[in-house]
Each structure stands twice: as structure tokens, then as C-alpha cells.
Image 1 (cartoon, rainbow, N blue to C red):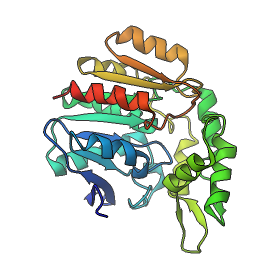
Image 2: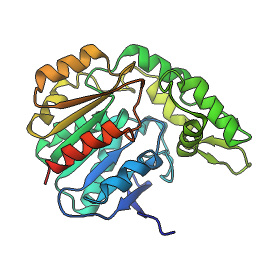
Image 3: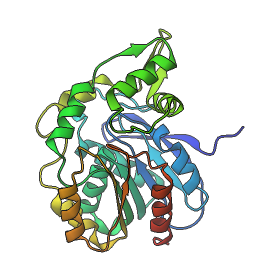
Length: 285
């Protein structure tokens, strides 16, 4: 069966070969899907395939993830560097305006892209992220990121993910955990199953300024001129209810969707999330 996308590449400003999935689609601003800290393009397989019925969809893998080359200097694993890399992709593809969908780290990047040039943002989805990243969530992520664990079978990998993320997805069945494992891990050269990212991304993330840039409220405010959807997991420890309320106060035109029985982060395959994203994309013709 033919894939719905092409595997393509671009060069970062410092010479890394970076990978993206390119889904051909219809007219209108293309959709740019940006993943979370330890994730990759496979996270958007369902949503990107769905949106490609309407728009071209690009799903870049940030340096150190998936099929993208690992950084030569771990200090470059920072949001500002990722934004510079994505600007290189947009330049290569001649994309002036786009719809940004960002999960966690990808949402930080969305706000930073808006701060740099708000006119380029035709619409945006912030998935379980805001201008304030709660310290409790950052601490939880620091506890597991960069641990080079590996597993003998996919079932072992799925159970390990459930141990770490079970509270965020209490309704997941075994099949859901297996799917998450296959999205976030790969079979390594030694035959064991391990995470599909450079463990060195944990090094700058452990620093105070490595998780999120300081004071992103002006960057969030830069999204005010475009349709905006904010998705939050009901029990998220990254995007608190208080931060969401302030986001709504500052941008009362934004649509918000709360995913019940979910923490950080919703998968964006939830029916209510897909429906809301469809509404937003329809407004960005």
C-alpha cells in the first residue's frame, strides 16, 4: 500500500540533515504539525492523514528525533534552535503562511513563530501548552527524559509507558499503549526496542531556560490576529486551569476544548479534538 506522504529532508542552518513527512493536499495555507519534546512525526499519523484530505500537511522531525540527524552539540537542543530549523524548512518549501499545530514543545515553537512574524500564522492549535509551563509538569518530565531504557518486546515497552504515563491516559487499553510505543520507539540495532530520540536532549532541558523561554505572554498575544484553538487535557500538569483562564481572558475569540480523562498531552486523535481542528482549518482559507 502506498504511503499517504513523502519522506523528505531539509538542511538546518548548522548543516544537519532533517526529516519531514510531506502529505499532499488541497489549496489554502498548508498545515505545519510540530511534535513534543521526545516525540516524532509518527505522533501525527492519524491527524495528518485526515487533514491531507483538505490541505497540504508538513510534519517535521526536530533535530535528534526520528529520522532527523542528531545534533553535534547538545546545547543546540533548545526551542529557539528548533524554530530556526523550521524557518529553514519553510524557506525551502516557499511557504509564506501556514496553520501551526503544536503539541507541548511544538506549541512553544508556535508561539515563538508568531512572535517573530504574526502575519505568517494563518491559524494555530496549541495542544496542552501555554505561556506558563507548570513546574510540577516540568519536574515530572525531567524524571524520565534522557533515560536510555530498552525493552525485549513491544509489550514490555507498552507496559513501561503505562507505568510512566498511565495517569495521563487512564482510559487507554493495551492496544493504545502498544500504539504509543510504536509511535515513540523503534527497534534498535541490537534488536531491542528503545526510544526514538537522542538522549542528549535531556541535558539542556535540565537547565532553567532549557524547558521554555522566559515570559511567553507577548508571544501568545501575537496569535491574537488569527483563529486559535487551545486543547487541554483535563488533568494536565503542564497547562493549568489558571493559565488557560488567563489565555481565554487575553484572547476571548480563541476556542478551547478540554479532553476528559486525559493529562499531558492529548493525542489529537480524540473525536472532539479532530472536530475542533477541522473547524479551525476551515476558517483559514
